[in-house]
Each structure stands twice: as structure tokens, then as C-alpha cells.
Length: 489
Image 1 (cartoon, rainbow, N blue to C red):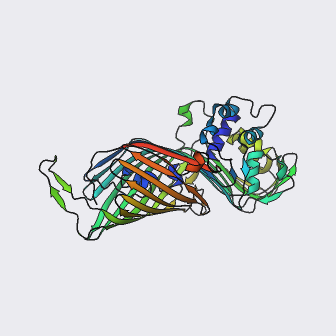
Image 2: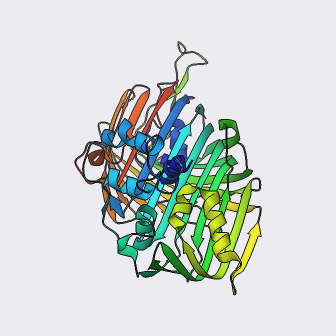
């Protein structure tokens, strides 16, 4: 069980295009269709009475700045030998601990910053569609998301999570938890999108959009330092905590079947709201041409390029109320010692809960609060987009995403990302080259393409092909169909 939990923990605490919010690739294209509303609900497909149907979209992302792997093709990190070491070998049984197995196999190198981060997600979009009719646009999106974000991580805590409390580098060290926050949520999402062209002049167009989400919570995990918590490693795998002000919350079960694991443990809602401004290339209103030989009346919009477009959106403002198989625990002014806390972490969320309660909840001076429900807020963020049509199907764009966690609440955190990209797009083909800056400090380079209905891309191209130290990887792919070829703004 603890081997499986290790993989889940590394995927969750150490591992959605949706949360990563890279606003590059297909989502930034004029052919994004329904995927375009995932960065701004005022986006539309610019088709004449067109329908965009997405069969599926998959994305996964992992980013951090404290550890890295030496350059190697990413396929070597998913070899059967490595998978077997954690799921069918002797990791954690007898000879070496799970921490030691992980460190030996991956040979992680360190390059700690003052504040370290880990972000990850895996998102699957099921059948989704966007219909553009006259000034209106209607969308329906279905998805399953697993998202995770950790910020303000002290370097000592990163060493502890990978090498354990007996790591030589930690002995005799004291450190502040630095208001460290780590959260994970798994949930399904059914979303309804609507946008409307609110104004048109000879030079411009203005569009407002909103997306409403119904969320079903499947799992949740939250660990937070509320400030002032101090850990000291005193040897013999013992940690002494002083002035501990911690939250440890989870909604999960020891599932024996897939159905039990994916069962609902809460529900909630979220909304997105956005605005798009478009500057036409020609100063004239959109003209309608009547073509009697075309079905449904033969009225089509004249194709008209834009010079540039600008968008701003507030995304994922919402929450999930977890109230089934849920534990909320808060420690105020907790002091005392605990031994082998790292092993409790790798045994699972329930083992960690038991050890924290046993070692700290009843200590003198400690206030311990326990409940069977809590509200987990979604990863709210502010997005901006700017797209410039250079010439001959060549576009340059800029995008930014900045997190806005709910103050004083249990809230997911998304990464801060700035991106610039160049792309070439036609109705049938597309090629893009994005450059992004993670947390305003770490640059990455990507590549994406679209051929007919299939698209694929990554924002970590040098890492995937083995040309750069691996601090993160991501990939997205999907299949979509446009049921109209008439374009125009």
C-alpha cells in the first residue's frame, strides 16, 4: 500500500493544463474552439454559425524549482524497471527505505531557492462543444481534473520529503515552515459557457463571456503552516516542533474499488468571467453575403482579419464543500517531538493524521480543533492575453496568469506564468513556438502543432528530448472537429 501511495503522493504533492495555465498552443489559436474558453470565457471560434466539437483533450504538467534530473530523454524516466522498483520490487521493504529507493533511482540533484515550488496537474476533457451563432456563442465542457500546488517550500522541507528525517544534511538544523502551503484536489467539472458580442464599430468588436461550473469533489488534501511553526532535527529521525500552527485536512477513503475511489465527497461551483477587445484590420462593419447555392439560406459573413485582440479574464472563482469521509484538523501553538514522520507520510494520509494527533494534539498548551467538513477554494487567477496578426497567417502573442488565492481560506494555488509565442496557422495546419517564465524566474521553451483534427504540444521541449536539466515536463494532446470552414470576425 505504501508503494502505491508514494506514486500517488509524488504525482499529487510533487505533480492540469487547466491549473498550469500555459496560455499557449491551441488554446491561444483562432482555431481553439471550445478549448479557448478555458483561458477566457469571452473567446469564440470565429466561425460563421459554426460548431466546434472536441472529442477529447488530455494534458499533464509537473514543475518545480528545487530539484532537477540530469538531461536524458523523458522516455527513460518511465521505463518498466523504474515502475517495478516502486510497485513490484523491494522498495521500502527491508534493505532500504522508500526515500532511499527514490533518491537512488532518480539521482536527484539540488538547486534550492529561497522559496521553492511544486505544481502539477492531469486533466482530461471529455466530449465538449462550442456553437457560434450570429453574435452568440454557447459552450459545454466536461472534464476530470487532478490538480496540485505547493508554494513557499523551505529547502529543508524538500530534503525531508525526499530523503527523510534522518538525512545527514538536516541533523541539528532548525527552520521556519515559512507559511508553506500544499494542496491537491481531484474533481469532475461540468461547465456551461456563454458569450455575446456587446458592441461593434467600424474599427472594433467587444465581447463578454461567462462560464458556470458545477464541481463534484472526489478527493482533497491540504497542509498549511499558518505562520510561526518551527522544526528542529535533533537526530535519530526525531523532529521537535515549536509554536506549531498547522492545518492538515483531507477528504479520501481507503478505496478497494475504482467506483469507491471516484465517489463524490462533496460538491461546489465556480465561475469564470472575461472580456475580449478586437481591432479590425479594415475599418468597416462585418458584411453579410447571400449565396443562394449554400444550405440554410446561404448567409455567410465576409472574412475579415483582425489586427490584434486583447482579453482579460478572472478564472475559477469558486469552491467545493467536502463533507463525506472528510477530516479537518487544526493545531494551534503545538509543541513536542515526533519520530519517523517521513515514514508516516509515505504510508498514507491516514497514517500521517494518526501520528500528528498522537504526538501533538494532547500536549500542554496545544489547541486542537477537529471537524468532519471543510471548504476548499479553487485556484482563482487573473489571465490576460494579447494576440497580434503580423501577416500571412503569422501571429505573435503574449499571455499572463497570476494567482489570486482566497485570503484566509483553504485555497488551491496556481503558478504565475508569463508567455510569449509565435505561431503560423491555417484552417488545416498550425505550428507554434512558446517561451514561458514560471513564477517570474524560470524560462522554458515549447513546441506545438495541429494537423487537421489532431493537435499536440509541450512547453518543455528541451527537457523532453534530453537537452536540458529536467525541472518539469508537460504534454497536451487532443482531437477536435470544426463543422464550418467559414471564418471571420
